[in-house]
Length: 229
Length: 229
DNA sequence: TGTACATCAGTGAACGCGCGTTCACTGATGTAC
DNA sequence: TGTACATCAGTGAACGCGCGTTCACTGATGTAC
Image (cartoon, rainbow over all chains, first blue to last red; front, side):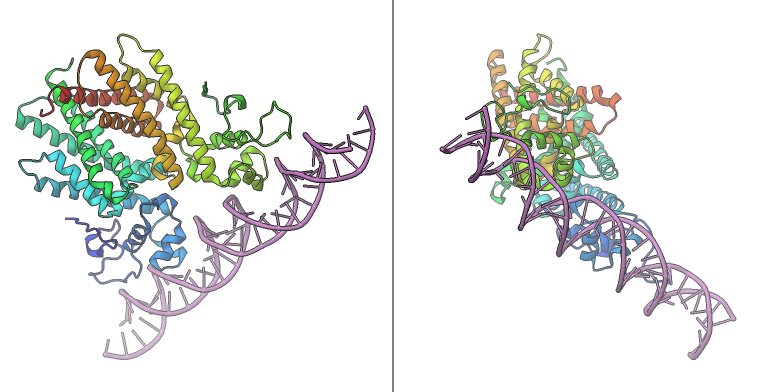
């Protein structure tokens, strides 16, 4: 199970590479440069004021301490690295929400605690989450598409959570798919905005976001009972 | 009144300049290059796949058909031009919504028709609106701040609309400020996403966005009646 | 085990390019008389 | 009205820089025998 701590550098063993070009265990040539090295270098450079799309190939190579042209042995171009990062980010997000589900307590809904977990991870400096939030608007087309894909996965998970919840409460939901999408997009937008705010505002912003989500959940329940309201 | 058509080039007379440095009517030196020239050049370069933050000073100068260094006679740097554009965009947005209000009919709520007007303008290729949607996530700090300011104005207008509406219906609203903010952010996010979708999906996406907004409005009304629901 | 060889991951150097910014200029415009 | 002058908006040329990409190389690694 992928579990990404808030530290910048990811232990290579937990980072699945798309190509098995440098499996360290088996006999064969040892690759000194791995895809993970570049992934980690890119992550290290990301920050609240530094987007992936503003990174240059040479910058990443410099951070990874390799020659610029060595980059091409691992990725065709920056877009390919970006897509790899987005896919990692998707798994990170799934893990976060999975953990949040475990924390569910009687006095806090699944949705509410998921929002909390999400914002917590974001404020802790999770670069992958940051990437997922910010490149959606301005990344190159391949990266945008990769992010849309991850968001769709996430929306589908949330939709099923909502349906499960409704079944438990014996209530109907209005447009659960739209509900899940609205919540997802709102959380991402507000999360992104919250990162620009000073630290002392963070808990307030989390509360506000929770309130917004509550508005949507209440709406889908109310309309589920009476669609013509 | 500022009224910006869907054409790329804005007639100079309708574009209020921040500084009256080139008022053509009164006696004085005639400035061949105006701020509007640069504003228009930047707008002409923007598009679904081209963000303001990716424009270079030289590109804008080239489009405006002036020497690169002449740029500095009008703006300190690209950020300053960006902020000017954002402020123009804010006025454009206000105008759009104002017009939408006039179109209000008995079988369509103010909110609903505003959402429609917004999306329509966006799909018509309004570059200013595009700017407002997209630079919020990745613009430089000054531009982000300028966008936040415009969004706040807009949220406040929306909040007052909602309150007026509630008063008319003799109902209470739960957290009208959060409601206005949620709707604003959602509309902006989904609008941005809709621009990447093929044309044949646009009316569906507008409908979906309207549904999402309806969820929120229903939520604030339901919680207004019974805050502990 | 030891040796000669093939492979290919990683590199140093170089390329042409567009960038932001500077400088001293020039020539059109408006002013003073 | 005509002329000499001051102003300053706009420019051409140049700068140093970081960029993405290419090429031929080299030297460590693993293989064959």
